[in-house]
Every structure is written in C-alpha cells, then in structure tokens.
Image 1 (tube, rainbow, N blue to C red):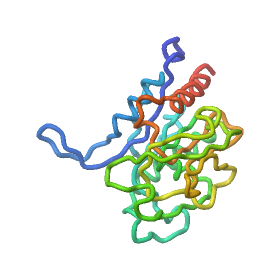
Image 2 (cartoon, rainbow, N blue to C red; image 1 turned 45 degrees about the vertical axis):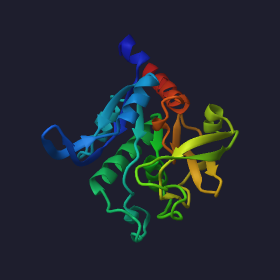
Image 3 (cartoon, helix red, strand yellow; image 1 turned 180 degrees about the vertical axis):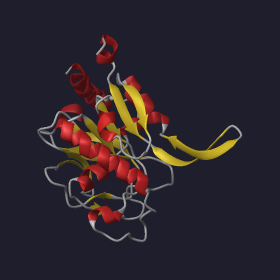
Image 4 (cartoon, rainbow, N blue to C red; image 1 turned 60 degrees about the horizontal axis):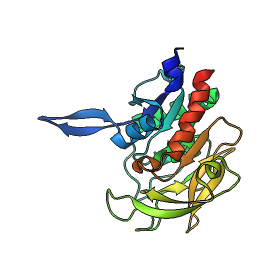
Length: 237
C-alpha cells in the first residue's frame, strides 16, 4: 500500500441506476449526487462510485477502506416482511440486493460504514429491523426536492455525540424511518417528534447511519471527516 493511499483512503459510495439526460443523450445511467463525492473528497477520502451489479461485493470490498450507503428510493417492504403501503415507492430490487450484499460483507470485515437516509434504513432492515413506511405528511418531507432544516437531539455517550455534540440542526428529506430496531443497533439521535434520526452499531470501528443528509452541508464536514478518519485507520492496517 503506498503512502498516498494511506493519506486518502478509498471510499465506496453506492449509486443509483436511473434514466438521465446530458448533452443530446437520454439513457440509463449509474449516478450519485455530486454532494456525496464532494463531501468524501473534502473530508480527505477518494470517492469510488459503486453502481448496482451482479455479485462481486467481497472482492470489491477487499480494495476499499470505507463504505457510504447513499440515500435513494424506498427499501422493498418484502425485505422486512411487510406489504407495500400506499405511499411506498416502487422497489428498486437490483439496488436493494447490491446494497444488502455490500452491507453484509462490510459488517463481516468491520469496514467503516456511513449510512445516509436510505442507508440508515438498509442498515436497520439488514439486521432484522422494520420501517415506518410513511411519516405524517409535511413532517420530515415538506416540499419536493427541498431539504428542510430540523433540530435533532443526540445521545451524549454515542459516537455521533462525540462528533456533533448533544444537538444539531440537520437537513432532512425522508418520509420513512426506523421502527423496530435491528439486532445490536442503538438509536442515538431523535427529532422533536420522537422519530429516530440516527443508529449506531456499538463496538465497531465506525458503523453509523443518519436519517438526514450531511452531504448537503459543505460548511459542516464533521461527520464525513470522522468517518474518513476511521477509514484511514483501516487503510493503515
């Protein structure tokens, strides 16, 4: 492993597969919002996009130092034994399969992991938890494609508390949330209505999921910086 890689760990970011338009083209594309790429890069990591694909997660994770499960569409309710509610979006089963496999292998390696919005939900469901399929209208998702600032309370004895303190003002855009927690997970942040806004897996190098979108705030890189620092330790191994 060369010195440059130790300074800038390789951070995988899961991505979308969707129709996209650029120049004169409109095609199926693998993409992720630039805010994730910028947040990882500015925090000291080298971002690597991970589009859904068949298999290969173990080989891929051997080359990575950390994993970001990015936000996106609703997790298929069948994965937690529920029927889809009227507000639940159509499943993206290829992405579900890809991310659940990545998460399984990342946890087996104790690879540093940061789940964002959908990423928190994938973490919870993968460990046997369930989701609230729709929060009250206008509570955590008010205007289409607009992040809304909300205060959250953070457990002071948590990893998140060590990074952000006991309270934060965060950018929210979600209509689902963790319900029953998965095995071993601990809730470490809550909104004013009691909705779980963060989960952690204690005893790990770094396994944190947040329901909000820290990548959208270029002036506050504390969470990404803590995650990349944990990934640097993995790179040094």
